[in-house]
Amino acid sequence: MKKKILLLTAIIVMVISCGETPVPKPRGYFRVTFPEKVYTAVADSLALPYSFDFPQYCVMEREKSRGAERYWTNMVYPTLNAKVHLSFKFLDRNLDTLIEDSHTLAYKHTVKAEAIEKIAYANDTTSVYGLLYNIKGNVASPVQFYITDSTRHFLRGSLYFNCTPNKDSLAPSVEFIRQDVERLFETLTWK
Picture 1 (cartoon, rainbow, N blue to C red):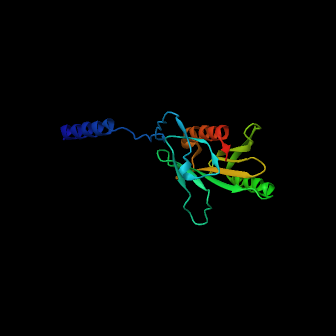
Picture 2 (cartoon, helix red, strand yellow; picture 1 turned 60 degrees about the horizontal axis):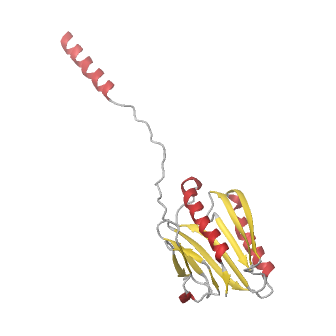
Picture 3 (tube, rainbow, N blue to C red; picture 1 turned 90 degrees about the vertical axis):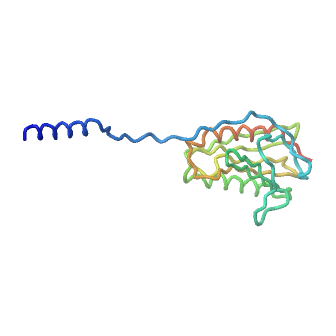
């Protein structure tokens, strides 16, 4: 009887000591490998009233949604599951209204935004003036902007990812695309 109790105790101790206490793994994110930045001019086949350098890893496409206007396009980032929506309007004494609309759309994110940084851009040589909104936090559109020549053209853009916003996992991708938007500002010309 003593041998049975001793054997049973040894088996129980071995079973208990061999098992590891489960430890939850920390949450991680997929590693994103970014392509080399190579730019090309927007194709004339789109017949846009403006031109700029866009990245070769993007696809330029016409906006197909209901209510889309003639010169609305998208810079599609297939590998990042993102789009920069570009909407264009000719000015007709409505510059103040369009700027206010852009401001309102950017500041609709204040509910979720931690901060909104505004960066002004001006190039008198090319008549390109604009404002870039870097919106920090778990927001739907972390980068928004408008560009105008103040007399005839107005271009508005906004970045959207096709996923639930998570500032930590999207931060590298947002920064990567923001650099492309800055290149757009620097190379934009009106036709």
